[in-house]
Image 1 (spheres, one colour):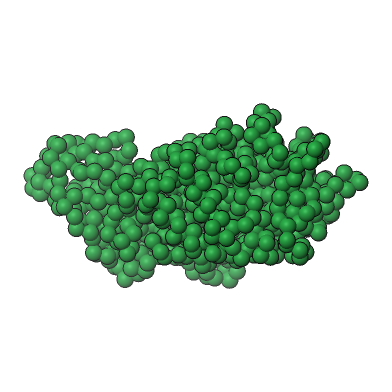
Image 2 (spheres, rainbow, N blue to C red):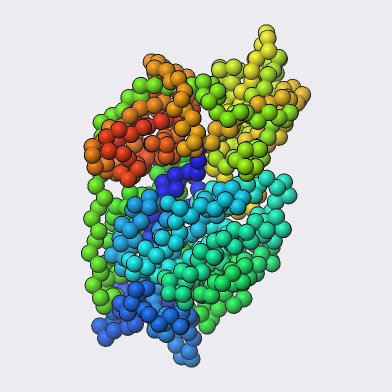
Length: 608
C-alpha cells in the first residue's frame, strides 16, 4: 500500500516528535538568563536591554565560514556555543520534510522562523530514500537538498540527523525492510550485513550532504551520530563505526549524540558532544549531563511536545504549559505556538517576521461510492502470484527486483480438504476465509482457529495485514511480516501456496483502472475496494476526510495513501492537503476490510 502517509498523524508509536510538522524546543544552556516562566537561555549576543541579537548570524548574511559551530569553555564562566566566532544560542525546531507536502515546506519553515526559532532539525529516513537496494530516491517530497536550502533562504540554520537509524515514529525506525531478508541480520550493530548496507547508503547520502555544510557555504552547522543509541547499546563498536563513516565521507561540522538522561553514558562517544532528550525540564538531568562533560554547554536535542495515541484508546491531550504541539498537522497555530513566540520575542533584540497566513480549509459535498470491487475480483489484475511450497514472509517475497514487500497486505491461498485446528503465526493481523466466507481472525496473540468440517476441498485464504514495524527497542530485530512459519491443520503442515502481494502503490491502482467494477450493493461483507468522486472547486483547499459510517481500512485520494481509519477511534478524520487535490473531480478509493459503509464526508477541521 506504499509507505504510510509521510506527513500524517501516526498512531500507535512510541511518542510523537513532530508528526504534525511541528517545531520542538532545542535549547542550549550556558551564561544563564532566566525568563519569567523559569526557562533558561544563553549563548547568544546579550544586548544592554537583556535581549539577544543574531541578525548577523544567518545563512544568507554570514559570509566568513572559516569557523563553524563550536563549544567554548573559559575559567569562571559557563560553557557556551559560538558560530563564526560569535556567541550563539540555538533555538531549534523540527520539521520533517518527508511528512509535509513539498508545496507546504516554505509555509512551515516561515512559521518556524516567525515563532522566534533560528535553527531547523530534521531526520533523514533511509527506508524512504532507498526503498530497494541501490535504488535511491531524492525527488519530489524526498528532495533533502531542496529542503535544506529552503531553510537557508528562510534564515534558518540546520542540524541534520541522518541516522542510519532515526526512530522518528516511522516504520522500523527508518531502516529499510529489505535488511530483514537476511535471517542472521542484527540491526544497529557492526554485523557485516548491516554496516555493508549502511556504507553503500552513506556513500550516496553523504555526498549530497557535504556541499550543504556550513564550511561549504551551506546551512548545516551540526550533524547527529545515529539516534538514542544509549537505549539500545548492544555493540560497543557501533557508534564509533557511524562516527567514522560520517567523517571519512567528508562531514566536518560539529558532531552530536542524543539520548535520554538515564542512557547518556551508554550512548556517548568520546570527542562528540552529548545532548539530552526529555519531556520536561529536570535539574537532575542537567546535572547528569554536566557531570558527563563539564566543559560543554548543556543542550536539549529533543524536548518532546506530545504523546502517541493507540487505536481504541482516548485521544492524548496535554495543556500548553508542558506537553503540547506547536503546529497542527495542517500547519495551524496552537496555543503553544503563541506562548513560545511571546517567550522568544521577549528575549530577542530584533522584531520577529510577520505570521504567515493560515492555509485555507474547506468542506466539500459528501461522496457516496458508486462502484466497488471485491478483493477476490482484484486478483486477476495483479502480477502473477508467487507459488511456493511453504508460506513466505512479506520481506522475502521474490518481487520488487528481489527486495520483497515493505508495506500493505499479503494474501495466502492453499487448498484444504478437511477441517480442524488451524495454527498460523501471523504478523500482524489476519482474516481467514474459506473461499469467500470469513471464518475468523488471527493476530500476534491468537494463533489458532477452528475450521469447521467441510464436505469437499475448498480454498483456504489468509489475508495478512502489516500494521507497521516497531521503531524502537530490541524488538526491531523481529519485525518480519506476513506468515512467518509453516501453517498447520491438526499439526499437519499445509503446502502449495499461491501468494499475492497487495502493496497498494500507485502502480497497483493503475492496474485497477482496467478492472470491471460493480455497482455498490446495499450491504457487502468482506474486503473490497470502493470508488467515488470527490468534487471540489477550481482552487482546491485543505480538508479532512471523515469516514464515520465505515469500519476499518485505508483511504486513497488520486492514488495517494492518506492513512488508516477505524471505527474504534480515537481518530475520526484524515488530513487531506489541498495540494493533493485536482480542480473539479478527484478519485477516492477506500479499501474497506470488513463491511461497506455509506457516505464519505469532509470537514474543515479535524476530529481527533
